Length: 318
Image (cartoon, rainbow, N blue to C red; front, side, top):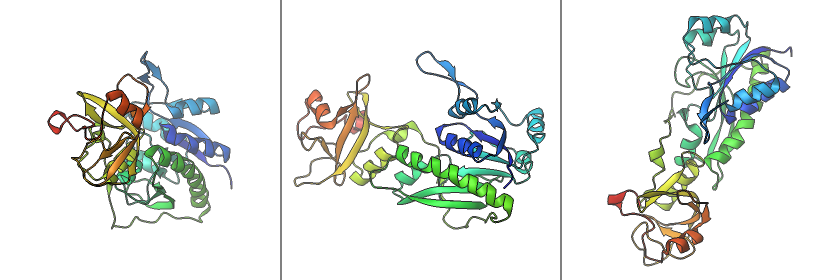
C-alpha cells in the first residue's frame, strides 16, 4: 500500500506508541499537534508533552496551538492535503471543518469497546465498575462525544489485580497496531466504519481527586476496585490526623469472625475491616515520607487490632 499523508494529534504517553507505529509503517506524518508545554516539576519550568518529545526525536514538525478555532490555524491544517488525521488523547475538541478536511476523515484511538465508556476516563471507569474486559476501538470521528462509527476493535481482559496503569500499558500498543491496520483497510477498501449500537452506551466522566477518598463502609471488592482504578492517578487515600495517607496498593483479604466497625485494624499484618469483607494494605505513604508496607505503617503509627485506621467520619473519610 502507498504511504498515506497524515497529521497526528495527541498529548500523553498513551499516544506515543501510535505515533511511532505510523512512522514505522512508512506513512508521511506531515505535522504533529499536541498541547503546549506546561509548568512541571519543582522548578515549574515549561515541559513538553510526551508526544512533543517523541516527535522531536523522530524529526517531525510540531505545533501546539491553544485553540483550533482560529481560521488561520484551520487553513494551515487544510493545506496539508491529508489523507487522514489520527487523534489519540489530544485534549482539544476538533471543530467540524477539521473532521471533514482529510480525505478519509479523522480516526480516533479510544480505550474502550464502544459504545461502552465514551468520554474522558474509559480505562479507569472500566476498572471502577468491575468490568471483566476493556479494549480499543478505532473510530471515525464525528461531532458527538465518541459517537462515530467504528472501523476496528479488539478486546483485552481485565485481570483481577490489574490497575489503571497496567491496563493503560496494555491498551496503548494495541491501539498503535490497530490504527495502522484500520488506515490500511480503510484506504484499500477492505474495511468500512460501522455505526455503534444504540444500546449499551455509558459515559466515562472525567476523574476528580475527591473520588480517591476511601469509604471503609463500602464492601472490600468496591474499595479494591477503587484503589486499582485510581492508580496511578489520582490515587486513593484515607485521613489520619487530618492528613491524607495514600493507599498505593491493596488486595482483598480473607474475612474473619467477630467483625468490628468498618475501618478498624484487624491484625498486625495490615488487614482492615470494610463494610463487607476485609482489605490488606500492601503499600502506604504518609505525606512527605517514603512508601512502606501495611505492616510497617501499623507499627509506625502504633496501631493495634481494633484501632481505627483513620479519622472518624466527622473528620473525613477514615
